[in-house]
Image 1: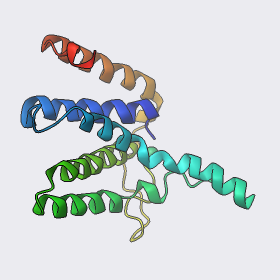
Image 2: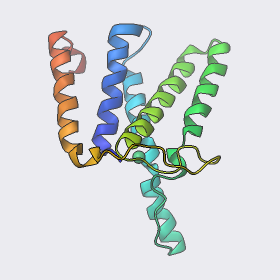
Image 3: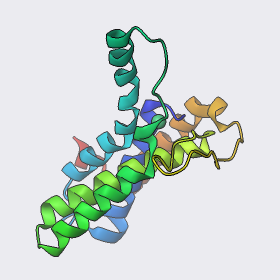
Image 4: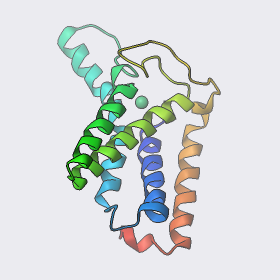
Length: 163
Ligand SMILES: [Zn+2]
């Protein structure tokens, strides 16, 4: 799995680049970056859920990397977003699209880092993710993403957007 910070930073950086180069600031208000960053971490809600589950049942186990790490949620948010889009509720449609993106970004990163078996829950249990051992370099990857983003923002004189 990727580190918590990587999930948030990578999602925000990619969304910010899309905002900068494709959508523009008016169609893509800054709060969507926050929504995306939170969605990028949200599948790991199964960690506190494990604590609650263990506390209530007394069973020592882990829910981590199970059902919340399924593409099913990405598809559900895309469908809700499309319905809202169709009904011209663009604000909430964009929020749903960004949540779907953040969730997908989390699953992609976890997959790249070695993956889990429940990406296709509740339909299949299979781990098709590559086992490259990238997880060992997790903190270095965090640093590289952050530095690259800071350089990009400085080059485009956007640092003031965050102050
Ligand atoms: Zn995860």
